[in-house]
Amino acid sequence: QAIQAINGHTNMSAEEFTNMIFQKIDVNNDGELTLEEFINGVERDEDLMELITKSFDLSNVLKVIQNG
Image 1 (cartoon, rainbow, N blue to C red):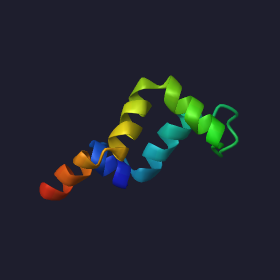
Image 2 (image 1 turned 180 degrees about the vertical axis):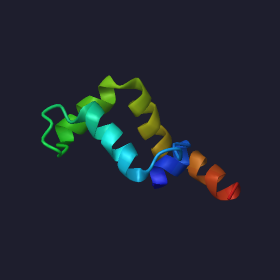
Image 3 (image 1 turned 90 degrees about the vertical axis):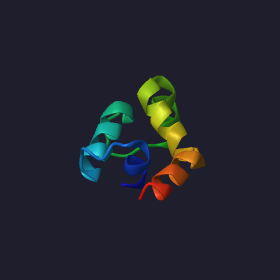
């Protein structure tokens, strides 16, 4: 939920958001993400890379806090 709020993805539930991420990067479809799957998946998906990058950029967090 925090990643969604920081990145403006509040139009879907946390479960829907998580399912979307797993669909993109859980290559063996076992319902679990290994570190290798996560890294490779993020590197392959431009939108996901941007999402993760924004999540680690604290300036976005400060903007969310300031704007309520």
